[in-house]
Length: 139
Ligand code: 5GP
Ligand code: ZN
Image 1 (tube, rainbow, N blue to C red):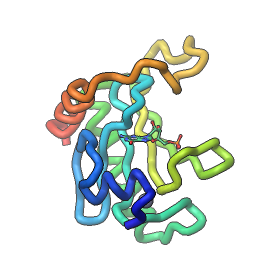
Image 2 (image 1 turned 90 degrees about the horizontal axis):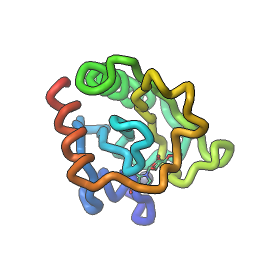
Image 3 (image 1 turned 90 degrees about the vertical axis):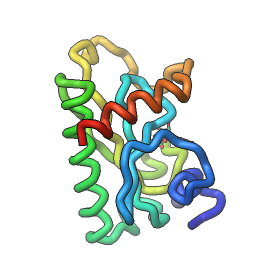
């Protein structure tokens, strides 16, 4: 656990988040930023900074949970499909240095969006809890 890491605090239960599901070694929770409703983050509990320090067993375990969640998001919210990706440290302008996979719902209209990220108005926490419950029900 790294005290100054927000994702470690979420994994340790000392920061609030809308949990989708968890395993002994990983957890999935709603991203606070919802450019399209259904954006989930999947992280290892243990602090791993990036893919360069990620061991294969942890990588496999996180990816397995991310795929399960992606399938559930598709069922629960977004029949259009899912983008599953990982953005790696500085090259991606990353702010949180704790390895994570993004599960991003795809919308038919996405092609027309100039930028799906950094929307100015974050949804209320209750909205994230509602989305998390819908995905959890589909798991
Ligand atoms: P990246 O740095 O790869 O772009 O992604 C970091 C992600 O973490 C962003 O999508 C950002 O919205 C999300 N994020 C940052 N801080 C928090 C937080 O405290 N709680 C949650 N749920 N998501 C966060
Ligand atoms: Zn961390």
